[in-house]
Image (cartoon, rainbow, N blue to C red):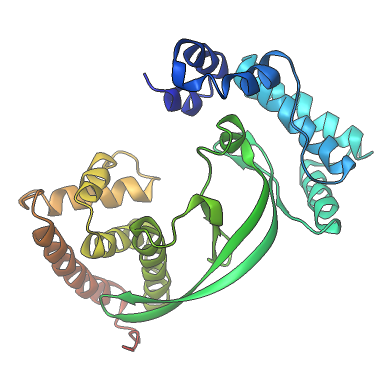
Length: 302
C-alpha cells in the first residue's frame, strides 16, 4: 500500500500511521500531527472573518477523514455552524452558499462552494486569466478559451489532506468554458495540450456540428482525438481499463467500451498504429454521425 491510497480512501489515521513507519515522511509528519491529533489548524492569508469560515471546513475535514464521522453527520454539524457564523440560522443551503461566495468576492477573491466527490470544500483563488488557444484537430483548427486560475488560497479537501500534492485540476463551467488550476498543470505537457485542450475543443466542435449528439458519442470522439495525437502508449490502456458497458449513466465508461471493441485487433505496443487507427475510426464515426443527425456546417481549416 502507498501513501496516496490512504488519501484516496480519506483515511488520515492510516496515513499518519504509515508516515510514522516510513523515514521519508518524517519532515512532514509534525504538520499532520499538529492538525489532526492536536487540532492546531492552519491560518490563511485572508481577512480574519474569512479565516473563521475556512476553519469550520478544516474541523469538518478532521471530523470526516480523521475521526471517522459519517459524512452526513459531519454535514449536519458543518452547515449549522456556517449559518450561525453568518447569522443566517434559517437559510436554505443554496442561499448560504451564495452568501459565502459574496463574502469572499467582497474581499477580492474568487470562490466556489459546494461538493467535490461527495465532500464539502471551497475553492478560493485570486485571479482568473482567460487564455485563448488555437487548437489543431483532425478536421481543422478551433479556437478554445481556457480560464487559468491563479493564486489559490484553498483547493478543497484532497489538496488540504495532501498539502497540495493531489487535488482537483479544474472544472467546466455551465457555459462549457474550462477552468484550469495553474498549479495543477504543466502547460507544455500532453496532459494539458492533448487530454485537456484537444479533448475539450473536439467537444465544442462536435456540439456545434451535431447539436443532438449524445454524451457517450462525444466522449468516444474526444478520446479518439486524444489517441491520435498522444505519444503515450499508456493512454489506450487507461481508456480500456475504464471500459464498462453496464455503467449506462457513465459516458466515459461507455465510450471506452466501444474503444475496447474497436481496438481489439490493434497491436497495442505500436504507437503509430494506434494513432492511425484512431483517425480512421474518427472519420468512420463522423460519417455515422452525419447519417444519424444530418450533415451540418463543418469547421474551417486555418
